[in-house]
Length: 502
Image 1 (cartoon, rainbow, N blue to C red):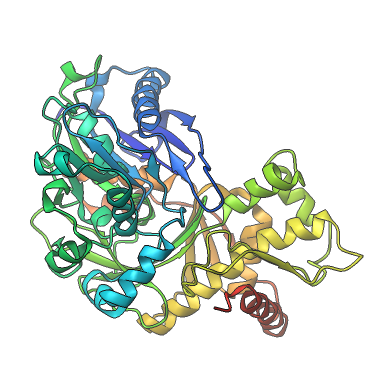
Image 2 (cartoon, rainbow, N blue to C red):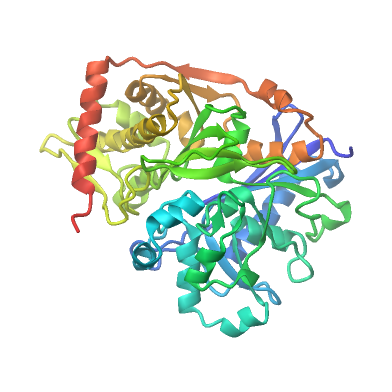
């Protein structure tokens, strides 16, 4: 096998990061480039797909330069991406018909209501493992098809739909000159178009939504030595580097945390917050507001499934405090500000900016701050904002335990917010279990690297990946059960006040 390193592309909601990993799972070079967040109106969130593509190519080249290696040293490439974000583009030109509609966007509320009324939410859930929500790609694609007149392009086979993985993969493997038009099972499982039992596009859903299968990519396993083509980016294509792993970001983090066994659980604290429980080769149907999703699939092997709880606003709330309220000037100030007060002074912050996701699924819920008094100050609000992420995680873990009958003794964590030790300690306190922070925090990128590396035998076994996983710090609960439950009861009261009353 040629190549000493694996390159991971981590295309996220706010930036694109490329990291080059060695055999020990250590980063030897990286680059990160932020992209613009486009807000045409309240509740609408878009990205420029061409900007994301340009940044991805630049970040790849910059990471290689940072690592001071030759591209010939790269054995393979893995891609992980923000999920559900929807792109529709022209096959001949490669130009999008419209901006990418981001997973947080809630413009498709009426379309979701139509789907529930006419097709049936239970029927959708039975087929896809998902509730009907603006979160997923299907309603976004339906909105695009309603608002852009491309019927002739569809008939002529010129229109292409994909989530960000498909968009990048197609361009990176040649674009209009024969790019690979594919997605993997994890990303496909987030579209609300894939049947989670057959791992293929569901004909009934496509027929109801009026979506021609010709615009959809081929669904492939997440990890395969021949699925995703060779890199054909100017300046790099002569090295014939294969792309051998593709995973949605949260599934990639599950791999990066070495959660390969049934019952293992991780939580990612990023723009949103995403808790996944590996349920093995059998999909577990949620009865408590969670998502049944594909965790990953090796070529020629059955898929592994997961239960997932998704929170729309986690780190994004801290960004909001900075940009919209001006409570902090820098993201890193939030921990010091939160620690400057002894408690939250009765304040709870429910960040339902895009409605509430799991386990409530109320698209009309709205963000609220409760418990304000004359005594309240910006430090109390900052503390309540951090605590909100921990409370939302408990909501999900409670539902997960009821669905799976599994009570995890600890929780592996990753993502940008885990360096906030106030949040991690409060998370342990409000859950009453240990929080395990790994030494390598960029587990989403690492998971993409693991997927790509396993495909080409850069790593030969899952045991080898487990051996790479090391603990940086353990946060142990310090609150009494009485105090813990009193605080959580206050959160539940606040959530109830945020619900829509339609």
